[in-house]
Length: 312
Image (cartoon, rainbow, N blue to C red; front, top):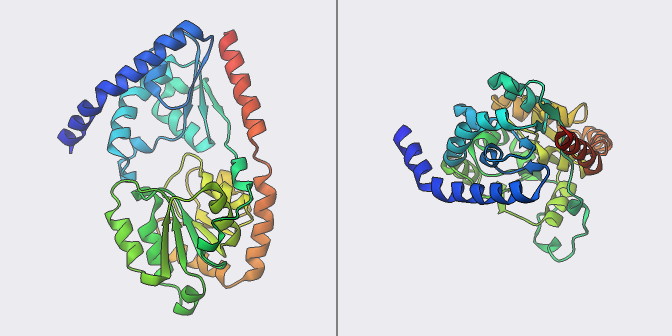
């Protein structure tokens, strides 16, 4: 495994380094301050004050089975970026805590600024309506990768009474990821009870959130958990994990389960699918809580971070 990862990093190293060097040259020449949103390596190469976004530390947790390429790059560069950065924008308290635990030099530099829901999700949908499943399904959204925990969701769903499954089929939305074999096999094992839509437009996704009987997101770990907030904004009744950042997003407006237990996930789903009243209650609480997150507030805090970094 070590040799495989090392070979992969050598294969990718040259184009990655060239992109970051060119970016650093342009930034050092033209900018007073830089927001590094996609690379830790860029921050290391800069002379101007830099604010680095840290989304999560999933690549440092082998149990999450992260993407190999990302794991190699982030493990080699994040420590240096922490030392170089003027400030570190973490998207949740969970990410902040994990970052400071692994890199003590981050203490004093971290600002927690949450995300929000894209305005595109409120756009009206017309042309794709005919191709979407009718209302009443269980919806799962996320890249097909190990930490999204879809095989355990399938096991939980399959343990529900057959009448409940027939009334509420499973619908899965998400791009192809890595190490998908167990995930795809599990989803296909449900046969006609599961529809895999792949990637869809923002408008279609928003409509799916509105149509679902329940949204289930039993992730093993998240930096934030944006699909949960998106589903809440759409008024969905949400079942999600009680770990990492997800309680920060869901608050008291979702149904929490243990993502390591198919029995717990099944019980959470059953509680909602058997109770239209509970679903309606959670949907209203979810909309209300989702409105407390806004890109305007996020932008204002980030601009303040950048101005202070530039001033320093």
